[in-house]
Amino acid sequence: MSIALTGSQSPLHVQIERRIQWSIERGEYTEGESLPSASDLSANFRVNRNTVLRALRKLRAKGLIDFGRGRGIIVVARSGPGQADVAGLSEHLRQLVAVADAHGVARSSLISAIERMPRPAEVATPPRRAAHPPRP
Image (cartoon, rainbow, N blue to C red):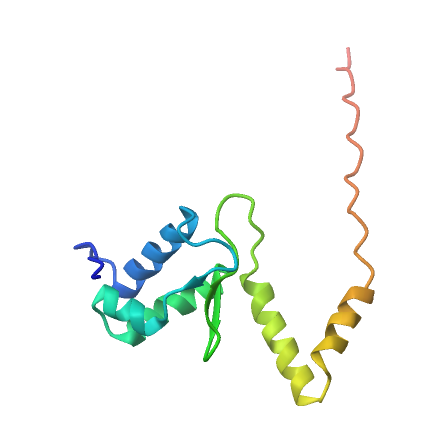
């Protein structure tokens, strides 16, 4: 099946990124579900595989998907109002895992350490000041 891209002035990778994001937002792909492979997507969109990979990297940076060699492309979260920005968090976690791997720390030890960390105290909002009556 071939998926036509619009005659938009936007670069192809941006059009592909928007199309995949739209599909996730509409619920065509749900959290935890696999997307077609980059090769299949490039065939469907009739573009070079690198163009699809560029779009996928942008979606990963937004925290919508995750992918890697041999793991496939997995929907991490649906986008929309109120969704936490997990893009930065995902990148920090990748770096943390890479450092842990380099130092021989087991991933299960990382998870245990995270679970033992205390949650930050809720931030209390300061009480509102009472309005002063106007001076005569």
